[in-house]
Image (cartoon, rainbow, N blue to C red; front, side, top):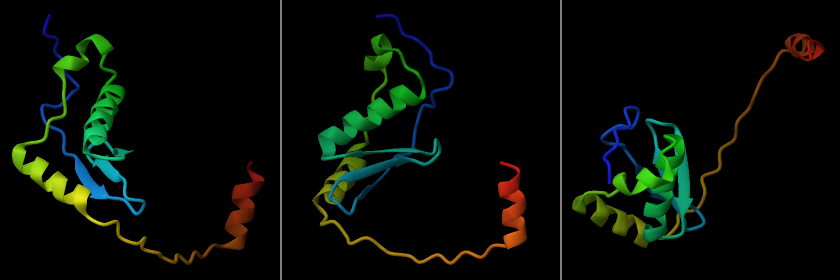
Length: 110
């Protein structure tokens, strides 16, 4: 198979993984500001690869040349994350203040 160069595709991509409240794994690619979720580690690898293929528009015929494979150290950390119990959601309260005149101006222009 012909090797193809994808200039916009970086050699390395940071992937942050944490356990979600529902027990699913949440993966974020912070440099790209994109994320996905998965039910388990195998599904996580599939989802992250799919996310990369979609974001960088990698044609299906070249996808076997581009694969998300974490290092063995990272894989061990992922297993620990996967085994963690889900943590309860953190609730936050946000108070907003607004100027009524400013709102009137903003909505009158719609």
